Image (tube, rainbow, N blue to C red):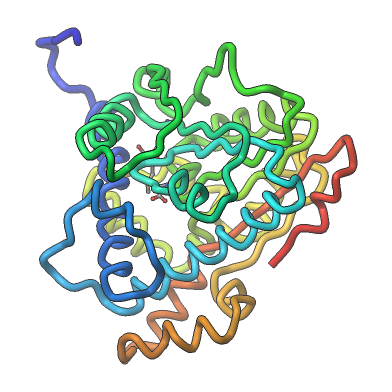
Length: 307
Ligand SMILES: C[S@@+](CC[C@H](N)C(=O)[O-])C[C@H]1O[C@@H](n2cnc3c(N)ncnc32)[C@H](O)[C@@H]1O
């Protein structure tokens, strides 16, 4: 690896802050898993249990996020009978590959995209902790251009096969890209694959007071949300897909997603920890959303997928 003596630039500090968000997400997930919100025996290889407890509303928010994304993803895998591929954008320390393997739901191909330093760290952990993270069939770490030209979509040459139905997932990723760059990524995806679905989880309603406080909190950590404009409303979230070649799009805030989750599991989860701040939970959930879009030339029925 080349070393350099130049002074850090603003964009270096920004990229570092963005990379740091993957640790935040994994720590929150690890804490929630340790309390029993959902199962993930693989996360402990990547992240230590945080010393400080996390507020129940944070863990409930992550529960809704994990379950909501999982429900849409499972519907896609079943619809395509796993004869498909998944591209996990900004995957961070996500353990999705192993969870799908356990559930016998592995797609034909599975790609992860992130900054080279995150991908390298992940591969290092996988190698060090085998056989715990077995089986990992093949892995290849391609240097990402994202590290040099922030926000540009990953170059994928020779790239994923275009004829295979493709699920792209972005969890809290697009907001760190300028609207031009995220639109460029979405347009690339809609025009490249014959049948595809995009699941996007990220902030919404960011123009109100609560949203502004969220932005300021991240800004104070050098993390500027350069894509926040698209996170104004469910309508702006949907418009980004409809103007970039997608045929159908749905968007729900996380309160709505929460109400669509299986009631028995929600009841089990709600009994885990006493929640004092119901209003805070609602406010948090109203500031995140799930947005999913499809493009389906062979008419596989992807448009029917929903919560
Ligand atoms: C908030 S974390 C979420 C990680 C993971 N998706 C999850 O839900 O646990 C955002 C991730 O997106 C990655 N990311 C953001 N912008 C990126 C870009 N332009 N290219 C590659 N990765 C990016 C960050 O490095 C980080 O791992």
